Length: 358
Image (cartoon, rainbow, N blue to C red; front, side, top):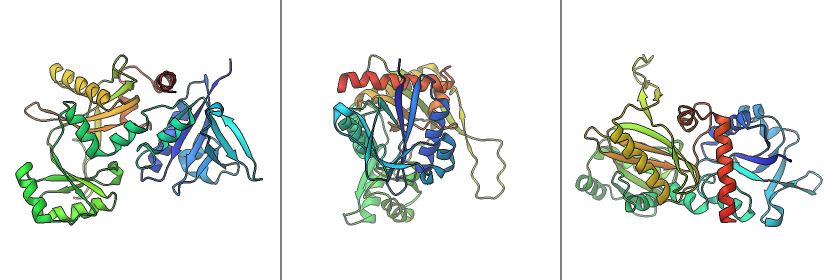
């Protein structure tokens, strides 16, 4: 029986390019033997290349200059699901694909654009579809959908670049709604896109202008103080959603800074030591979020647990990281699911989703 051909789609134009490459390298190192793999990379300038070299070239960044790389495009002819390699002599060579495993992050990665291309191509792919991906990328829209579904999140105010920036009015709104300090985040960018802290009205204008560098829409969010709890989810619908063990992000208490400005590194503690009632509430809230946005394949959810036991969903991501230090695979490893098994489960879910959607 012929092996299923899985394409790893990596790289991209966002600031998370290097993280994506590391995830692709780790996936290739742990891909079950029953699959054949091909690599499709997006350069920082947005060129899509078929890369026939080894994993180490992706890890080092040398893949872009590999001699046998060539341009490629996805076909939207469902009778020929795959890519066309654009050869140097001007001809095109068709390569059939059975499934695509995208590990693209940030804009033009997890915002629905490539998911839409893959949906149009008819190729099964790991993860959520275009609509869900676009929704979850925009933190403002995601907040509206999730809170309407009963998921508790921090309060926020939206500001846009094309509107007059009225700091006194914004300051008054913040004081009335939730008070300082606040976090200022681009609506459609991840952590690498910049999260800015404003402890007082004096710091607000600078934080908002810095966030506008990354996006035209910015959220000013209530600062929630609490324990940072992480979990991973896999599944396609309410009948098969699984939740990983919970993990907690802590600062390394034994760290001794070399300079006064050096922050202690974060450490992940698995399992998170929580009352079972609290842990159960977090798991149920994570599943509710997964269902509310109609996620598929894999997702990660970040929570805050405050001193009074309140639980807030901080962020819901549809494309988790897969590097050796990424939280998502570490959470599943704590449940006895090693990386090759996790990859196999996600590819199986992609095929199951395709039977329904295509």
